[in-house]
Structure formats: C-alpha cells, structure tokens
Length: 184
Image: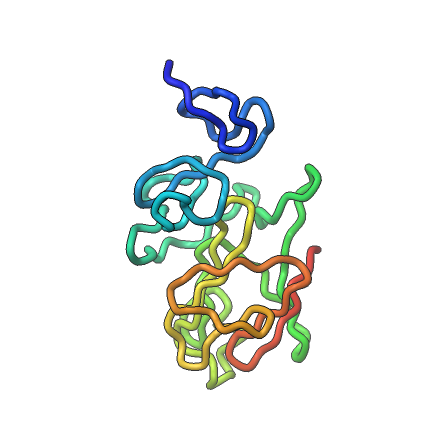
C-alpha cells in the first residue's frame, strides 16, 4: 500500500484516504493537477480543491465549472457546515422580503433558471443565471456566473467564475437583494 503525508499533521496515511487517520482533517484534491491539500485552492496550480469523496463526474472541470445538479444527503436535508463536531446549516436571510436561501451544492441562483427562481423571479436586476453555490471541502462559496449586476460579499465584488468563500456573519449581495449569512 502507498502512503502520502497529511498536509496538516505530516503523518503518513494511506494514499486513498479521504480523512487523515491522525488529525481528522478532510483531504481535498485539486481538480487540475490532483495534488492533495486542505485549502480551498491548490497550493501547486491555484485551481479549486474538491472533496475526494465527490464523484468524478460531479467535479468541476478546469478551466470552467460544470453545471451539476444540487446534491443533498439521502434524507433530503442540506449538508451544512461542521463546527466543533456538530453539523449546522448555513443560510442566507434576506434583509427585506422575509425569505431565506438555503445553499445547495451546485444550485443556480437566477431570475428564470435555478433552484431559487420562484423567490427571485420578480427582480429584473437579477440575471437569468446570476450565480451559484458551491461547497468546497467544508466551506460554502458563491460564484458569479457573469451576471449583469454582480454579486458581492462584504461589499467586495466577486470576479466572474471565481468561487468566493462566505461564512456566518458575512453580508452577501445578489442583484439588489442583501442577505445576512447565518447558521441555523
């Protein structure tokens, strides 16, 4: 059996491991060069890192992202984020309108397309395919799909097609909607 070195604790672990047997960190794999690491982006080539348990057909392909369907657990609940060993869901609460967006991996945010169109369809400032949610490792990311009016996280405009991490406490702007990211 071949072994690799854990990028966190530097212990030798089996090459096909998804988690380090010693420190428990999830091992991620680069979509481009297949390097093993724990960060959102590859330290070797800068491309996104994905969970080693993600089926290859669902993985984003360089240099563009595939539009794979939203993936949830088998019981229909959102996967959520893990903090201190407990699983929590991260949601976006609209400051006006009283609705909540629950991120789903690969879910498209748009006026006429995507999982949230029934909530956002009345807003002309949201593009047909405005953005999408991605779960890379344990972190949620927002990707602007080249929208006309853009996406912002904490007042910083996202670059098109670049996954940008958001977490509880962040403010997310999509079109003209302002959301607070909170754990539920």
